[in-house]
Image (cartoon, rainbow, N blue to C red; front, side, top):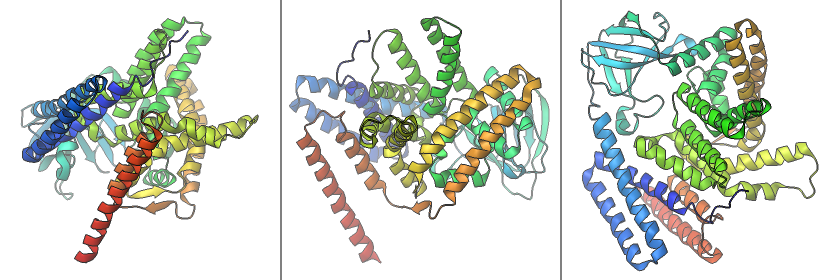
Amino acid sequence: MLKKAPQFNFRPLFIAAIFEAIGIGIGGIILKSASGAAVLTASLLLALTVIFFISSAKDKRLIITAAVAFTVGICAIVISYRVNYAKAEYVEPRKITGIIYDVSPEQGGTTSYMLRDVTVNGENDIKGNVKLRLHKGYSVYSAGDRIYIDDNIKLTPDSPEFELFSFYQDSGGYTLAEIDNKQWLQIDVIDKVKLKVNERWRDTVRKLIYEKMPEREAGVVVALTIGDKNGIYYEDKDNAIAAGVYHIFALSGLHVSFLAAGLFFLLKRLKVNAIVRYCILIPLIVFYVFVAFYPFSLIRAAIMLAVSLLAFMLKRKSDPLSTLSFAVIAILTFCPFALYSLGLSLSVLAVLGIALFYTSFSKGLSVKERKSKPLNLVTDSAALSLSANSLSVCVMAEVFGTFPVYFIIANIIAVPLASVLFSVSAVTVLFTLLFPQTGGILALTQVVTDVFISFNMGIASLPNPLKSINGLGVFSFVYLINAFILSRYTVWSKKSKLMFSAVSVIIMLVGLSFTISGVLSGS
């Protein structure tokens, strides 16, 4: 029998995750402006000290946890930056060598290559990967090619205006680009290098999909299976954003859940012992993370799955917030720049929204004495979509400046459809890899992919699918804070919760009024 976890047992982990993130944020300011960070750090430590002396013995343990996590966050990002990215300055080299380990076809004939083990002018001083984008007209190179580049080129961080926090976006590292489009890079293949196991699998899966399917559908399937979104057509990407379903292309809990469920069902049908099933399942999920080149959202999902399975094996009941907090702490401790990954932020907020509000939405949408399974599926999908987007939607609106009007309707259909597409793609690709002569079964994947593309196109063609929204930073912050405070996980009284929300909203409105008056007076 499963032992019930103590109530609110997630609080230390949750507080540690929050304060480690705060520490990483302030540590980033230290790297940009030490004086400004010193004021912030001193203010926060002073506040923690005051609270420590006026709080109860039980609360003191939480404050100590917060202070330790905050210190760990600052140290983690400073050490990581000093060790890995201290040489992130702009250089204009003449000679570069590197091994191509990932090849991504793009629309219009452009191809993106990821390079590792890069040397610049004979020195191995590039601590990261290099992204090389070549337009149509260049030779097509293969994964495993060690190439030599010699011409008027420039090596820069991905985002010059925000270089400190751009290293872990996409595949991370640096970008290799042409200075002048009129000049061509001289590129020669020196030799072939044996790829790593995960690189070989990734390259094999991508080649198989592009060989057996049209380019447009192949780009969608590759994105859903191994997380490479470079091949998605611009039109399909815009349609997915307008429909509010672009998050489906980010490998995360959705993909891990269906992959784990499929493997679990197969092993169970083979009558494999339960403990052995879990011992097989976890390494396979970890291998999938490596094949997908370990995006943070997928790492988060894999850690949560592993912890949940471990809890089940130990006959313990895992708490979703506790598991999520542990995953965030693990990722941020070893890779603090992940805090600035939009994919991880949206993934964490989606899971947090489900943990906080799914039960409430499900009860609110339920119909008494429901006996219709299709109706149950619709209401449960709506509850899942609402809860998953309840927190992440404000961040997407702030980052992209738009709000997808039909995202609830779209997700009710698109999420199950994408789940079917991912499952069919995984099965048909794996079957074709094992039995190459059966490559025709990928036609089934193509049919489902066409349905998915057409559905997104239909939603995007509705009147005004996107509403332009700008300047919601303060609203988003207050909304996120109040959403958690008002949830069932906060152990305050109902009166305290309402008072906190009322005060925070009043402060926000006063600040907004001053901002508006300043803008009007300035104009």
